Length: 237
Ligand code: URA
Image 1 (cartoon, rainbow, N blue to C red):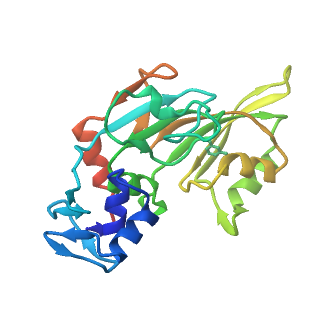
Image 2 (image 1 turned 60 degrees about the horizontal axis):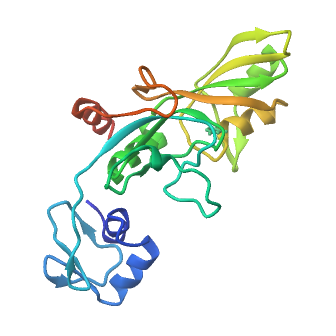
């Protein structure tokens, strides 16, 4: 069961705020009855009608994209930059599950299934987000330990479940570090490394839960299998 305004917004009909206005104004019916209560919960079986039009129920679609650099993780951009959804030809109103920065590459899921997105993103689901970061400079054990003890981001202490130095390149004075986190705070990985004095030159999400970019070149995508979708649903708490 989901909140009525959320279901309306996720159908792509309008924004959540506008959906709330329509509800309060008495323009929304659930199973033929006007509903003005904002907290009303509805399920897939309920028929929602807005201003006398039945809200269409889009079939659920799920994609895994190997995000290239230089694209915004969004469905549109006011500065006219390229957005990830233009790589996936579908009429469904899919949106990215979480965010990767403009210059970050790797695993990105897209769907029109809000519940699936919530499960993947909720820290309770403990979905591993595995990143490979190229750092300017060479990280030392002491700084890795500081990361492992936890860094405060947005007033919350975030503790990575793994930090591992993978490769040192003395010539270019850079190193590759793998870091595994469970939250999805804005620029989290970059901010964590910055907190111990390192600039992230390149960042790739190598894995998110069971999903990797295996078999996908940069910019390529595939549909998730029903089994993969079921595995994600099995994480629901
Ligand atoms: N952390 C970041 O700093 N950037 C990303 O794109 C993802 C995680």
